[in-house]
Each structure stands twice: as C-alpha cells, then as structure tokens.
Length: 331
Image (cartoon, rainbow, N blue to C red; front, side, top):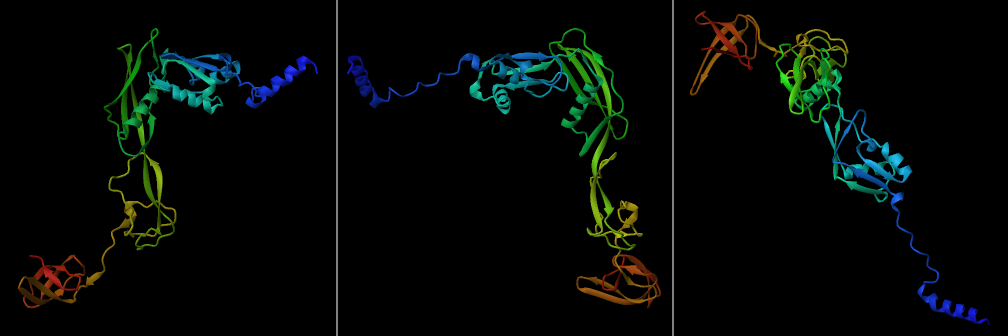
C-alpha cells in the first residue's frame, strides 16, 4: 500500500470517533447587509397623509426589506397640533405584522420617535374635527351621538414655519336651543395667531315606544303590545323616561304607531259606589267607631271624594270612598 494512502486511512480512523471528520460547519450569522437597519430620530415632522415607517425613520440594509418596511402604515395625524409617539415595541410589532421578524431587524437611535405634522394652514374641516373631538371627550349632555356644524369656519393660514403648533378648544356661550358652541384658539410658538367659533347642532340617541300590534281602546298596555326602538332625535330623552306599561289606551292604536303621551292615561280603579246608593258613613279612631247611614249623590272610586247626604240630619258632607264600599268623612 502506498505510504501516503496508509497515513490518510490512519488519520481518518483517529478523527472518526469525535465526529470532526463529517460534521458540517455552523451557518454564519447574518451579515449587516442582510438585516433591516432602522434608525429612529427623537423627533420628526411630516408633511401630510398617513404616517409610514419610511417617513419617521432612516432605513438601511437588505433592499427588499427596506422596500417593504418603508410602506408600512403607522396611523394618521388627523388634527393640527397633534403629536404621535411611536416606541420601538410598536415599530417591531408593525414590522412583524408584515412578515419581518425581530431577528431580521436592528434598531438604533432613540427609544421612541415623536411625530408632528407640518402645517401651512388649518382648513375648515380640521377646525371642525378639533371641535368634534373636544365634544367627544367632554360630552355636553348624555347620549349625544351626532355633532353637526351649522357653518364652516374660515381657513387659517400660518405665516412661516411653526415649530410648536397648538389648537385649544373650549366651550363658548350659545343661545340656540339644542346647540353648543366651541371656540378654538390657535397658538404658534407660544403666541395666539387666531380664533374660530363653531356652532354644532346636537342630535341624541333616544328611545321611542311603538305598538307591536293593534291595540283596542281601553286596553291596559303590556310588553306584548309594545316594542321599544332606539332612534336619533333632535331632543334628549327625558330623565324620567319609562315605557307606558300599565297605562290604558284612550283610543284604538294601529300596529307600528308611535305611542305619544296623549294616547294613553292612567288606569282608573273600578267604580265602588254609585249615585243614590245607600252607604255606611264610618268614622274610626283608636278606641272609637261611629257609624251612620247616608245616600251617595255621585258615583265614586276608591280614594275619590264624593258628596253624601246624612239620612238622620239631611246634611250633605264630603266623604272619601273606601275599598270596602264604606265612606269616611273628610274632616
């Protein structure tokens, strides 16, 4: 056997038990150019439109990852002066939702980036949105569901670049019923540069009662006769609102008709005594009961007051009708 071949066979026999002869090398760690490098500044000002990762950071590295990451949306700054703060965890989460895992990303720079929107002017719609947002956060009344501006405010043009823009809404006096006024003050770098007043018409979420079927006159209303619907109204719902269960229909009500207050009344108790009937006049006190006989001059229900002529004295007195048919003088 060739001497060189013998040495090679001997070397293989020595190395084989350790596995060093056949084990593949570990894969190299990803190089910098294979990663997505995201650098976050402390603050950034954007021009307009929805925020993207490409607007608020500096992206380097793998070109396909950079292209994907640059278009990832991060929300929108909808009102003037609004500031969005995006931290690293939020950015990693948005990247992961688009298929870029954390081990493919290298983050540098600030722990969070503060994003502002650059404004050359504040449009009428932006003023209206500021007013609406203020009303959402501080509702002027319960169950307000719509705030409708009665007119659009004028646009406010900003002179030069503004570093710190603030819009400060507050309630103002309004003499119009069902309306609320919001005054919006605009501050640029600490100085007031304009005001706008917006009058909003309020609409409310309220309930109404509708007949579920035809209801005959004299019917005592139950849940089977009615249904409750939620509607939008120009007036708020009364604080003491309640369904008219137990009330009596004063006329026949067709199905699907809204039930108003003048269509129902309180159910009356039955007539206990009738005119010209003979009744017992009863006075009861602790340790004393006095009775007499009289004639009723009018019909009466329990709790009502009627006139009664005493049979002995012929004197007419006013008495309260009791549930058992007796009457008690009103002293």
